[in-house]
Structure formats: structure tokens, C-alpha cells
Length: 245
Image (cartoon, rainbow, N blue to C red; front, side, top):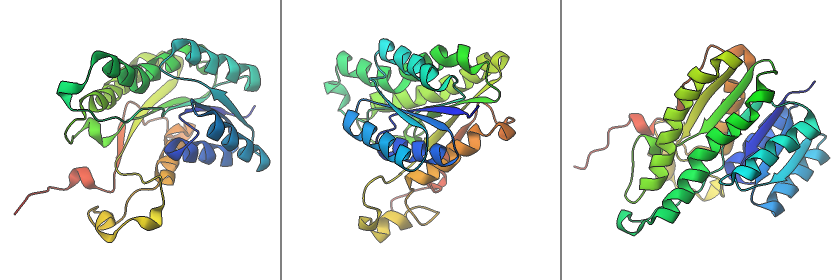
């Protein structure tokens, strides 16, 4: 049977590119997102291109929606091989203005959902050969600008969750890795300035396909010796010392 992948937040931007990348490698692709319009449109576009795709409307902060992602995937495709925990909200609020409701919403969407979806899918994944889970974190798990407390905490939590699940899920033959993107531009790439590109040691801003290719690499069963790792993809920015002179 064909391998199947669930991509949360797969309707737009980074998730959309990841879904397309797996479709082109002949995976059954499940696009899970709150954005019905763009999610359905992307799934239909993939079908028109000859790929097997399905859209599932969901809010990953809701456990009942996570259960529906798994049950719908198994009903349609019969198996789950790869999960890309990509869905997230990116909000930056001064810490003194950040209330508990917003803190919980960001952590539940960005962090808790990755655990709950992985847990819910595990009975199906352990019966597949070479299962893989990839959590999409951020370089903000490693460094910060102002007013990023909830977002940074959620992404830092994904790093810890990754190595914890990698150890726990070893008995099921499922690997768990993490990707921390830097600046990945999902808008009009041609509108970027030279200074945007040249501040990166790689001399360019990242593109969604950079992350999609990494997801494919980490999910390949032949790369099963990579486990519990965090792959930083940021053009070298976190390795660059920046001083004011």
C-alpha cells in the first residue's frame, strides 16, 4: 500500500509546500487545517495533478478534532506512516499583557497538539514499517526577540517533546525528529531586499521547499538512524555572531 502522511496546518505557506512535496513522492496526503477554503482548494489541486489527497477541517487545539483527523485518515487510506506537526499560531504580545487564555491557546495549538496527534495515531503507526513523526519548531526555540514568551515556550517545548517521544516510541518502531526553521518566506520572494538575503551566511532567505525537502529526508525509512534530533534550517543565522560597533 502507498504510504500516508498527515500534515497539520497544510493549507497555506510552509505546510502547503510540505503537503505538495509528499504528494509528488506519491504519498497519500491528508491536509488538516482550520482554513477550509484554502485547504479544500489545495487538496483539489493535488487531485487534479493525479495525486491522492484529502482535506480534514480541524482545530488542533481541540482533542476531538485530533481524533477526527486520525479516524478520517484511516477510513480513507487505511494507514498512517508519517505525521508532520506543523500547525501553529504565531502571536507576539508584551508579557505583561499576555493573559492565561491566550497563553493556553498558543501552547495548546503549537505544543499540546503535537503530542496528542502523535499519541492518537500511534496504534496505527506502529503497524506500519518505518513510521516517522516530524515536529516543526522554530529557531525562536533557541533565541528570541521581545514579546515572544508564549511562542518561544511552545517551540522550545517541541524540542524537548521530540527527544522524549523518540525514546518512548522506539518500542513501536517510530522515529521522532524536529525541524527548526529560521526565516522562511511564504510571500512574494521577489519583493525581498538584498539586505534580507545577505544577512544570512547562505546569502538568501529560506523558501518553503527548503523545509519540505528536509521533511522528506527525515521521513525516509532509509534514514532511520536519525532519531530524536533537531535540524536547524536557517541559512546559518544561529551560527552568526552579531555585535553592534
